[in-house]
Length: 200
Image 1: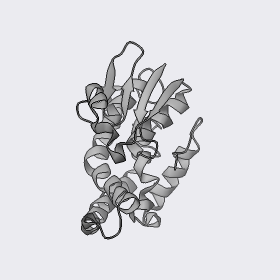
Image 2: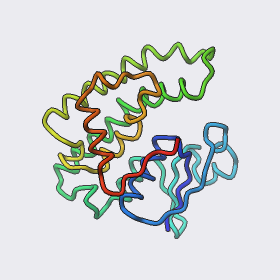
Image 3: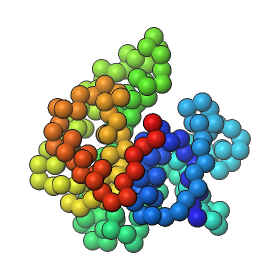
Image 4: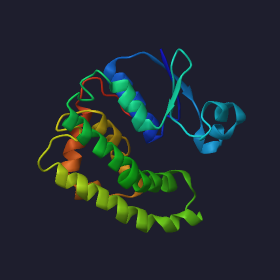
């Protein structure tokens, strides 16, 4: 059985829950309150010196970090990660996009608005975060004009990666009605067998 160390309200951690539930694989979840320093303890740093969640621990003690790397490991051999070289490359393209051009803006805007008081200095970052996050959604909107999903045209791990913070982007101040194809794609993801929602 896999053990996942994570914060349930984190999109990066939710990715793992979503895929594991779709795969029907048993797993144990260990809550780690990373928002309040739980990933900076000596005990946690001994498992992941980078001090971040999610963290996947296998029965034999091997550990894997970085949410999208974990998604690829868990999905190997399933329909959620194509064995076709081109489709796999397209999947990875979108997963890299998620971590570089999407998550740093969409997730951070959500963090600021959900967890920080309004008088906090980081609220000054929101206009730029909203601008750059909107550019990411523009790219996704255009891609969805010719593909139903982001994992080489089929539903897969790239869709799970992008869904994790897109579906709750309104928490960060994004007006998602601007991107109707993205909204329709979110509904297609929710309709997948085994889908489970993020813990609020």
